[in-house]
Image 1 (cartoon, rainbow, N blue to C red):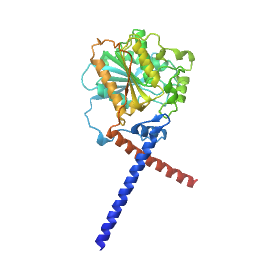
Image 2 (cartoon, rainbow, N blue to C red):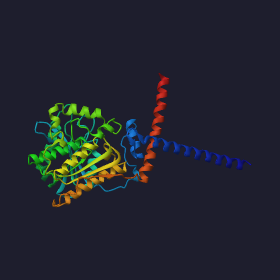
Image 3 (cartoon, rainbow, N blue to C red):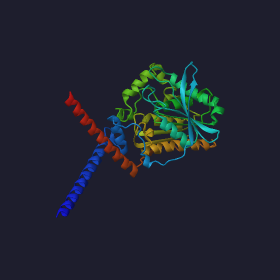
Image 4 (cartoon, one colour):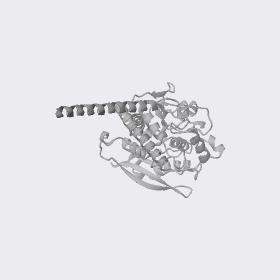
Amino acid sequence: MGMQTGKKRLVRGSMIVGLVFVVACFIIIGTVQSWRYTEAGRVPPKTAVILHAVDEQLLPQGLSTPSFLASPTAPTITRIDTEMATSDGGSIPLRIYKPIAAGPHPVIVYYHGGAFMEGYGNIESHDNVIRSLAGRTQAIVVAPGYRLAPEFEYPTAFNDSYETVKWVEQEADLLDADVSQLAVAGDSAGGNLAAAVSYRAKSEEGPSIKSQVLLYPLTTFLDSEFASRDLYSSGYYFLSRGVMERSRQTYAPIEEDWSSPFTSPLLTEDLSNMPDTLVLTAEFDPLRDEGEAYAKRLFEAGNQVTAVRYDGVMHGFVSFYEVMERGNDGMRQMASYLNQSFSSTGQETYNKEGFEISVLQTQDSWRDELEAYAMGAYLIGRHIERRISDIFLQNEA
């Protein structure tokens, strides 16, 4: 009799545990699904949880792919931190990743994003992108820590950026670099700098830049009418109108500078003979339309241009390549484009079929879906923890 009672209790307990698990799963799935409905449209689950985590300041430090899902690989690159003297008597830090294997190697100068302002981005915040780019291309990647506003106004960051390209050319032997295979790349504000550096190098017959990759670049400081600036400028998608206006006020406070090709590449009169260009944009990004407009202008000037829009993602999505499949796709496409550029003969013919933006409507993989709900469970737990903490603080008060 006692044994039967014990079995019944065990079965009843298992049923209760199972029921709690099912209810918890429904709560997690329902909550994550509710986060998908944002102010400007429905987003994929992984995008939704990351946007929610950042908006609620719940994103854990060191967010990366769980270790049991990662494939261990032998290191193929090494890191060097050094400094570069600038023409105005100052200096800036340089982070360099280079292959362990003997060169000479192609070289990429990468400009980090961050609205040109202190506290919004630096070579540390973008180290994962810089490191991954070096590993995937087996090229030397040089990332300058250009000086930031409000302490340093335009043209300091731009001059630092251009002088970095010249430094690479001058130090080619030391770096074991093949400067005939030189590319520039950057995201957001860094994309703006990369485009401006390419134009200055062409105009002044400076270092020969073979290709450029611009990730969701800012291309004009003017108050131009772009639909994306209105649709996605609240800040929920990682970049707000307020930040853009503050960036302009601190980085380029003199209005006459806003029309310069070195601050607003979109306004450049002569864009002929520019490097081959890849422009990546994001659907939910206030800078989407101006990045694509710049790509179109480059094409119309006779340049080889590839323009790709990733649907379902926000500004800065490539920086989340470790936890977002779409971010990893963007990272992979950037590396593949640069590898093809380095291996090309430069004899490709200009595509005269007309400008086209490739829109990638990628679907979430099962892994992305699973990770989205796992992250959702973590965030729900953080919400509960925060609520309990607030209750205790109120009671103590």
